Length: 143
Image 1 (spheres, rainbow, N blue to C red):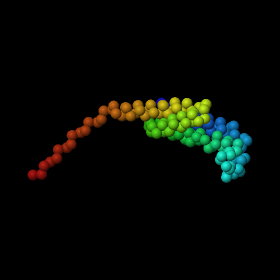
Image 2 (cartoon, helix red, strand yellow):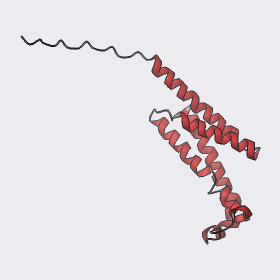
Image 3 (cartoon, rainbow, N blue to C red):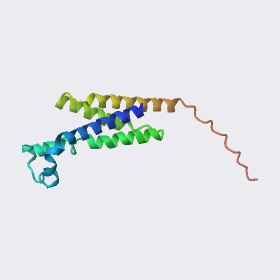
């Protein structure tokens, strides 16, 4: 489950970042790399500024990092902490409410997989028998 979640998170992050770059970089890279956005009014966002937020400034690059981190943890047999799944789920719901149709349901699936893996891991830890404590060595009494 963790591996599937990691790959889904990575796929969405890469898709958003690469898609944003393919759609916007050819027309706006010159403005990006010539400091054309410096000091620009965010409220009156230019097309070059909007293109930046679609590509580099989006949640895509951090989502790539999260996906890689989840895969890294999985390869080491570790379950990611549930807060990662909760933050991913909350962000997906907000994006769905605010922006509308998008691939945010895939993030909800990823979050569900991570939460299920965390719950199963916690349950298996609770069910594992604890090692019986060895009796303490007798203490010799001073005579």
